[in-house]
Image (cartoon, rainbow over all chains, first blue to last red; front, side, top):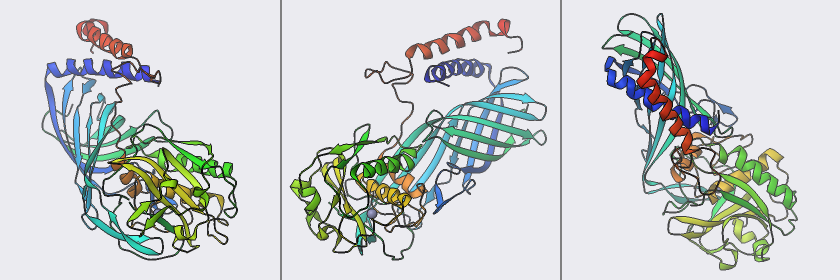
Length: 197
Length: 259
Ligand SMILES: [Zn+2]
């Protein structure tokens, strides 16, 4: 997909979302689960990678219905902050997704763009670490940095009954960059306050 | 300013998190950072200048150019002729943790890799593979950084396999970008060389993300015209999408039954 098509999709998406929004929501959903950040992308040990990591995640979404088959389901998600062993820095992940969903039986499939945010905060100060054949004080970052990535998300949800569902979502960062491209995945158990379908 | 030494020996430490190499949290501010190699002949590192340049290109492509949450973009530069001080001089005076850059070795822009034979740069030890000093810092901006590869006879770099040389140069480039050492053994920025590294660890990614955070969408893509002519998007694309969306809202129910 080239950038021109990408921009067209974003524009198209914005309008259809607005359309769904003015129609009013038909479901409110709270979820809890797990986020794996950049699965298989970084070394969990020298020479090895991991495709799953434990990281608690909480989500909330509304469902706006276009038709019995199609919905628009904007969603926010946030992880618990992860603090380094010595509490000098912490990382927090959050996202805003805006997928179009297709309902089929007890299944809902979703696809759409989103934003993924990474916040890395440091408390300042220094750490004593090895440097050559001696040790040295190294500055710890002071302050926080927040990054924003456009994502493309694809997910499948299965409904257990009127109130409960489970969902698996894949989120691609840097879709058009073969070196930077990365994949997050999310697994959640959800409670539906409104109409599940 | 700090002199950063990369060692072959072992010393164990407990786990903390990534660090920086200067208190200002300085980073390069330019969009694309080049890695150049000094033209003088290296005697003891086992590779030619052009091989060293291609090792540097591999290092940035295998490690630093792969972080989705960072805007960092690095490329291989060229082989550049520099003063002989870069081959024989001392990178800084004073202690390792409080080094004053030698003016003759200040790098005017980007990153320069140079082999160097001055024992004082490596604390007199051949186990120290290299030393890096971002020796041209202005406020929170790194303008230039120098990577010296230990070119003394009997150095530990010469007989390393190709992949190891790539990871060693990538580690030094990490310092040039503004990072200090990491306490995690799986991290590229760990203070010691470890065989078998082929990618960054989370700690390296966090460090480079903190220094070079990505902020998408880039305004050049959908919203505005890119003046450099490098943009691939067009404001017309966004407009056409909005137009199609508008048509769908107004006529959607007639055009697409049940939509
Ligand atoms: Zn180092």
